[in-house]
Image 1 (cartoon, rainbow, N blue to C red):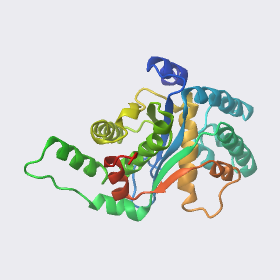
Image 2 (cartoon, rainbow, N blue to C red):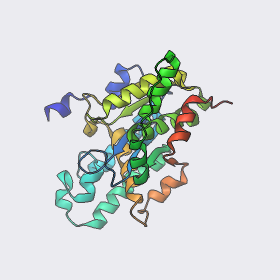
Image 3 (cartoon, one colour):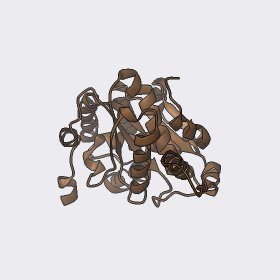
Amino acid sequence: MDQERSAPSFAEMAFALHWAPAELVLALWAYFDESGHPSEDIPLAVAGCVATCEAWREFESDWLRVLKDHGVSWFHAVDLEHAHGEFAAWGGDRQRRERFLYALIQVVGRHALPPVGCLVPTHEVRRLRSRRPRGKKSESAEERLVREAEELFADPYCCALAYCMKTAAEQFALPRDVLLHVVLAFRDKTVGKAERLWAIAQEISPFRDRMAGLTTGRGQDPRRLPQLQAADLIAYEITRSTHQTKIRRGFQQLRGLKIYLSKADPARVFQGWLADPSV
């Protein structure tokens, strides 16, 4: 509880980091297996929503209202699905869960937050981990950065994260001529990878002038950040869709928005990091 009280809210984060109302914020959540680690047996997904800082504030009040109406303090997809935590009393009441989920999806749809996501299928997880680029005995600083980026792309999480950042920059930040901030749900085992990927992007990616900053979730609590809870909703639904034939009620509404979702093609994503999107 002390950690929750001390963790910054979105408004506090925006103020501290000097985010302007028109600047974009991409909130992302990653799903591995239920133990929290990447697995070769199930897909990996990184997904979330992007919106202006001002739009996120408007979204937050609607999201919190839905939580209050349903008697919970925050949303976590795994807890809802398995009736854990605050949802334990809901038990097997499927209709109650579906009504709650549908209400949250409507909030996302009303605020037209374009979902962004990347799914790494099981066979790609295995293939990516078998790729280990070798460095040259003598290489320039730029060649070294490209090689390091390629090594990171051999990691499923980094490949999916790179796709999301690239897509948000190309599809939203560049056309609007605004800066993009990225907020990640904290995972201790991936934070170093994310920070290194961001650092390399600042050096070699064609959209580096749009990428204003990365917040990796250190010291944050998703219970105080509805923006990350929305990312959790999108990422979980994308992961679930890989082994469920039926799309849950309401998620079709999000598909009415233009979902920027891809199954990972590491070579294509990597080349996109090097190519100028304006050409």
